[in-house]
Length: 92
Image 1 (tube, rainbow, N blue to C red):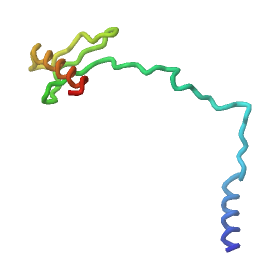
Image 2: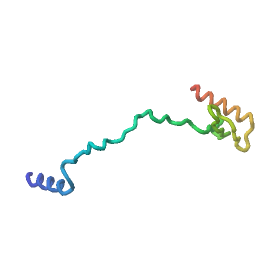
Image 3: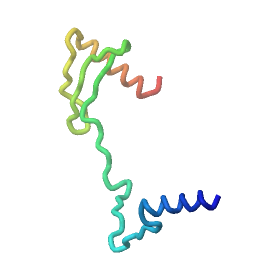
């Protein structure tokens, strides 16, 4: 048993120091959690009930505008996708 402990101590001593010293002259740099507020999304993708991508709208200030409608969809499809998104946000 003593031989096994001696081998373990010798192996650990060969890998480096037993004690690691801390340099208090340079404290670690930390940043409070709320210094940077995360940015919101820059675009909104609208999907219909079937899960098909209907349109993508860019953010302009606090509102979304400049919606690009996917080929094969109409304005009614976009309005239905908006309604579907609103229902999802309400938790229905």
